[in-house]
Amino acid sequence: MSMNIAIDGPAGAGKSTIAKKLAKELGFIYVDTGAMYRAMAYYFLQNGIASDDEAAIAKACPAVDVTIAYENGEQQVLLNGENVNGVIRTEQVGNMASATSVYPVVRKKLVAKADVIMDGRDIGTCVLPNAQVKIYLTASSKTRATRRYEELTAKGESCDLKEIEKDIIERDYRDMHRETSPLKQAEDAVLVDSSDLTIDEVVAAIREIYQKKKGE
Ligand code: DC
Image 1 (cartoon, rainbow, N blue to C red):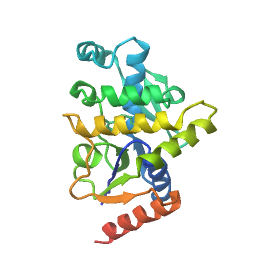
Image 2: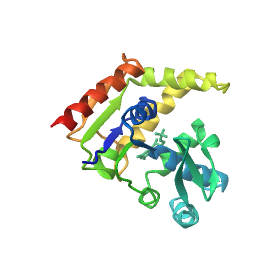
Image 3: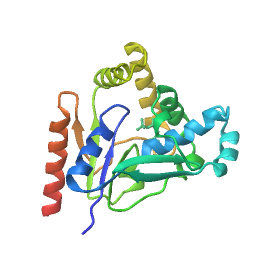
């Protein structure tokens, strides 16, 4: 039987790190859906389209083609054929992705795949509602801001911890309160709070949930 694992949660909870490790261990294909919204956001930024200009965004959408490819097991996001992996991880693109993913016209571009571990905001509730394993992965905004701060400074980007936490709180609010498929814990999802857990502890906890389901 094929299995799907859905991991949703707010920005910076560690979804992609955990999902990537689990996918490798379990032999699943990993799809980072946030990267697709980021690629679209990057397109809007490049084309001078404002996040609150829904008409311009709707007009631009048909010209945007986002596809996922895999190279050495790593997900590559192609925007109109061009690999944009290296340019979509900035705070500016993340905030733009949060602001523009509120529009149904943007959300329609996301394609659902089978036999995968997907992470995002609405995977357990909308994209893979029949996933056998659903996880809602979260952590305190302070922990998430600190993690993102450390990630960015390690990459040599200058940033401000307070500013990042403020952005995270704003992003949480927008992701949780938008009309179309807002971020929320699916009724059948297991809540995992990673604030005081290491990456390996989170991976082990989810692996246990998966193995229990598989044995049922
Ligand atoms: O996971 P991320 O930080 O790369 O996601 C960036 C934004 O994309 C996030 O703030 C909201 C949006 N998103 C979404 O609406 N639905 C998803 N399944 C994944 C991301």
